[in-house]
Figure 1 (cartoon, rainbow, N blue to C red):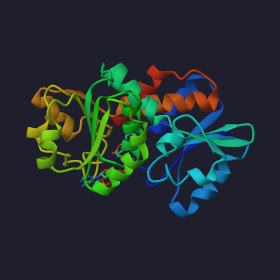
Figure 2: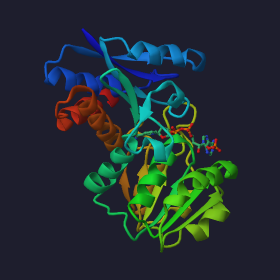
Figure 3: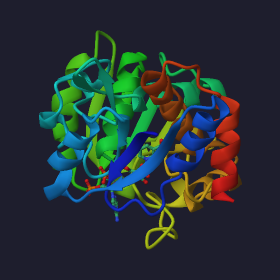
Length: 282
Ligand SMILES: NC(=O)c1ccc[n+]([C@@H]2O[C@H](COP(=O)([O-])OP(=O)(O)OC[C@H]3O[C@@H](n4cnc5c(N)ncnc54)[C@H](OP(=O)(O)O)[C@@H]3O)[C@@H](O)[C@H]2O)c1
């Protein structure tokens, strides 16, 4: 038996085991996708375990996407630029870290959201690990304007300190504090509004949203990275305001599909993964 795991803490709400196992079973692979719940002080040990022959790799999630980097042999794809790893895979004896969240976000926004970011105005709420992948994806897709709004403004500044250098001629990027009065002018003419905060997530933050409903731009695509519940309070209010909406599930499945192909060398059965993820969320 072979294993792939998800490394994070806590992991009780993860749906990755369900849809990744569905993909492994579809290809009749002798492998199980398991939960490797890991606190920070055990992270190095868990990563070392992946080196054993029976293990094919791992997903990495909150709070370890940045701290896992020193324990890997090298980074590739978008991981060095983003500064975060969500997938560990093996090539020969080497443990490589990559980032498929960037791909997952863009696939979801383009394929499911039917939205092309190039030349558009985008506002990203949040400046954590997920926001890093989203901001990098939007800058590389050549948005014309990008504002990153975060409760702790220093974190948004630091994010743009790292990623703003990828902006080219004619691209404007700025950071602001996540406050309704500050956001009001920033949201005028906004084409894409992305929630990368954890507000709205199942649990203690479920009945919270990142801005007041009156500020939701009705002509924008409103995209919430939170996938559980499938429709967050923020998306419900956006829908009521007349905006198009997109939930976090497609990004989760697409990042997982790219990871699956790195671990197994097989084509990811994306439809089966979607179906399994949707039924796991109820
Ligand atoms: N769909 C997908 O594939 C996918 C992928 C990755 C993540 N996600 C989701 O995206 C969300 C963020 O994940 P992450 O990895 O970026 O987490 P993270 O690194 O912990 O960042 C959390 C973000 O939420 C903000 N926040 C938390 N509580 C807040 C509050 N009460 N008021 C205002 N802002 C608040 C934080 O602001 P401060 O900096 O001020 O603390 C920070 O910007 C999670 O819900 C996660 O499940 C989805």
